[in-house]
Image (cartoon, rainbow over all chains, first blue to last red; front, side, top):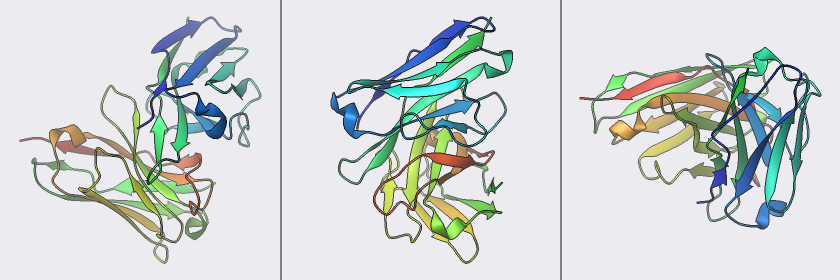
Length: 111
Length: 123
């Protein structure tokens, strides 16, 4: 199965911009659509970014996604205390029988 | 906005079976693929299984293949996960999630999630 690698943790101060990376085990990121989820303590996960860089209705434009052939990134600008939580990238692997792979998650701390 | 509510989680002994259910409210359940995602306490999210809108296509993580079976009842707007031969490694919070696509060709993003139901496998 594919593996998506994220940094285990990152941090920032209010108002700052942070980025979270997501790298794949192969160079074929160009064939994978990447989605990003936010999981705040005690809540259900929330879709932040889909199709590499699209925001669902209701997600602030402080959140943005980008992707290259080898990795994807989530950027959060104007960091707020309520952004503190876990962030996951995910992609669909179209190999035999197809499955969804989640990255290991990145814990964001707002200092 | 739509809502998903999971049920069926429990404390169960290794080797036993358990059936999880997910009820859908205020969404067009029969148009979208559905999934189960789990989270071991203190760990990250893990996709468990997915099913297309018409139940023709299903997929499973290697860790559960052959032991878990996903199904759906569009008339009753419900999703199920039959879990057999449970092991302690299956202990997790299980989330039900709605796909943004029908799942005929591929799985996509999950835009609606439930709050989860806890499964504990222990002697």
